[in-house]
Image (cartoon, rainbow, N blue to C red; front, top):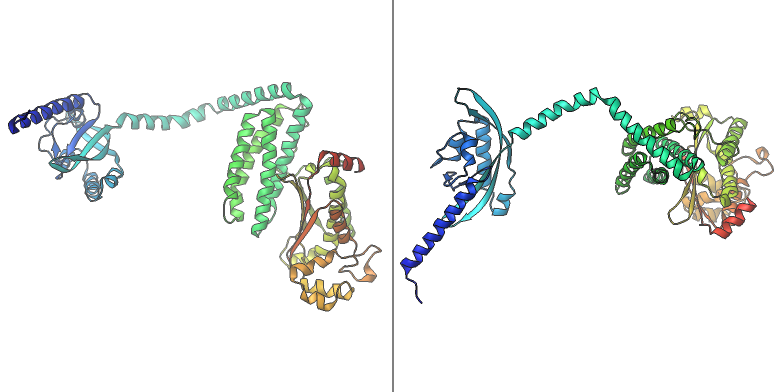
Length: 506
């Protein structure tokens, strides 16, 4: 069956007419202003019924977009819109055009019948169309954002008033929620376990505070500080989880997220650690509230920004007492910073104590300069010692010690080792600097003159090496002449049987 050309054209006209009627029905029922712009920015019929309400006019035939806006916007806005349209026209492909930013908020001035003016805010969006016979056509959509803008402004005006009028309500809600969490937690885990977890959290926060105060210049030291803080904050978060303290757990997780951001950075500086002090304040705030609600469960809190005193008889208390004794004996004022010693397993208590005693004595006697010499060098009068113990994720342990004294001079180490006949001059000359400074672990090595030395002179660091090897550990040494000396002791993991046996011996 054949269809004549005239019949075919009639069918097309009927389809087009039906499509236009359908389009008109749709346009009459949308709440937004919708119209089509041709290549010369003229508005093509039909337009949505909302256009009459938005622009307060009924005639849009043969009207350009510029003439539509000219009576209701200021000259600068009209120029900006014209520039945006020109840029849109020259954007190139349809994909690029569709990605053009919309004119999200245009202030328009709509005349009223009484001669006044209403101010409204409209948003314009443009979408490229592919219409046969109408190249470079655009579908325009106009949205009235006046009410939304007004509500937003009113909300902003109201927010500070609400905050000023009812801060005690917000604070009371937080306290009631925390009090509920505390009561449920004590009932769940018991008062002793609750008190111990709170105490651990406080100790961990003090440790973070001390770590943040530690000076650092090298990337390795920055990384060490970061990992040490990660371990302490993880301890706080685990304690909060175990006690079901949601607010404290959220503060700890926020802290951990910031630490993860620092972990992935290529390099670190002291400025990167400054924001952590703010997060630590938030944790301390949660901790102070917690302690204020649990005075019957735990002891009254010490000042959170000051290092807490170590419990009598603990490893930390022993080492602090030793430091004070040696510092007084050799007239070297020093400050010892201890981090994580409460985590030393029972099986390693004796090993860590013996190693730390020798490292502290060696630093005070040989490393830390007299106060007047330190002041001439631009250092603090008090020498700085830091002792840090970490339990690593792979089950191993790590003890780090640092002093900010005179450091090691490889040439001097070689010379003393040769003078004490610990090595030949030829062998010493062949050693690299990092190898040469390890000669200080040899027995009878000492920078003190033989007449000044006690019977055990030179044995201290040899003992350290022996203690480390006895538990199958490793020790590393690094130093910068005039600035610092660092030791890192790596200890192997403990299985339960070995740990129990060593704990009994300790």
